[in-house]
Length: 349
View 1 (cartoon, rainbow, N blue to C red):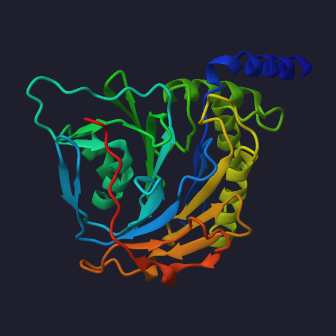
View 2: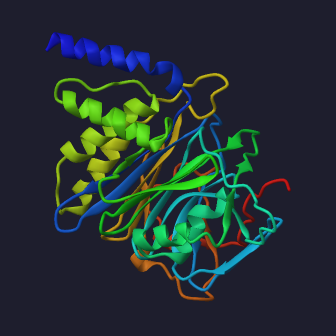
């Protein structure tokens, strides 16, 4: 037993160098009687990324102002968490589909081919596009694999490269991970893909996690803030936690797991903006359509019940102002205010 623990510790230490530039975590919880909950953390070096919650109704037409503009009209209403008032980073739609954007240093996006007339969709708008158009993970996978548009990267307002990957999960617990590697879309689709963190690429994360499963979480779990270690801890605890049909307990379980894989305030790596404090957490109760948000510098959790929001066509875009208002907590369903839709961040063409 001592030799196995020593080997595990040695392996964890040996992986430190290639994996240090990682942050953000996501996990899907399977409770009883269809209780599905998805949680994520948002970690970044900038302590304030102008985060707000935005409500978008059905029938909302969007035009993304890239060199090859992409236009669509939303089929479903949604609530998203934004950063820099120009990026949809996370959210849930009225069908219980959750989409999350996390950092991935290895991401390389498709380049235009000769005479490529396809519209382009910046990564800043991909979460919104998915939530606007799809009700299930299978639909999202089919749409992403259709090849009818080209996903393009952005540069964050702070200057860091916008290299990310995406996860989706629906009310049934079906999941998909979307990565763009060497210019090609790679999809991992299935209920078994519960957890996502960051580097290395997802196939390697699965291999590392399989190693730790052979040791057993009751014996030893890696404890650093590296992506590989957070992946292992999230995978273990999201399934070892209490499996229940009670929404309050299910949501509490997911919050506790996401706090376990959060990066403490003040922990950062110079020059690595994605190894940094956990700024906020979200938890989506997909069975009951309740979306929770917690700022790590705030005293409490707030939430909105999508069942009680007006998503009817023509009802307009609305915002819950979080930036500069950290004392908000409790049920905020009725507190969204009409607001002009923001423009998504686009590449400098």
